[in-house]
Image (cartoon, rainbow, N blue to C red; front, side, top):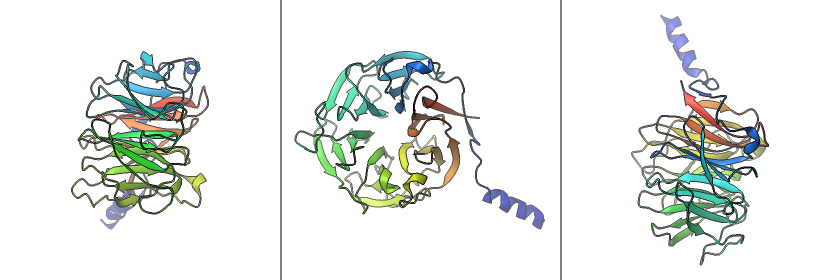
Length: 320
């Protein structure tokens, strides 16, 4: 009997193998490699099931829309986007597709068919002003249940802040300065908001995930094994927090070049953020893992910003 107990104990102690529950599809997407440049961001519409990909090649539109099987559906963003970064479909209103552009220093909202509706920031102007709002390489967007919009600013490591807008896109607040203290950032690279309204920030160059209230007040932070003194070994690049029903949370480590499937945080007490517990590690062989997304079925998508043809793609990890 003691052997059975020992075996069970050892089994619990063994790390989860690579790709234990998810695997990639080799023929996804079904697009010739020369048509796609470095892929910066990806997002899934739960309304249509379509996948929106931001890419930086010159032979296709900056935004490519695919179906679940990876077939090309349509493209948009020509002459409106130069270097897309974050791509997010608003989960509370999937008629809104938001994309940040780190070359134009803007965040733009499109319809799913590619009609430009809103531009935040001044196209082509790198700045730090608030009235009107200016950005310095904005990286990502997140959405509150009350219609609020949060934009991380930015990839240049200059502003190191988050701007909050209300449902009418009026600026509510800006919080964060450059630093490593609570509520400070050094390249806020990715954002997500959980059902309790907490803001999760991939504070990339500080090697941590910060958790804040919707007003920017520090609650706590996660560390998934990063050492800020050795950034070459790992940094949090991207976050995706699925619905409570999906039980899916994804952290992309662009330096170690792998994607972590982690246990979602507790959703009972706003102050209880839990800790980073890795369930599965998804490997990347060619491109640099950048920003993730997922759907309610547990499928994971990760954008890779490597060089074409092998390193510039979007990976789909399916369960089973």
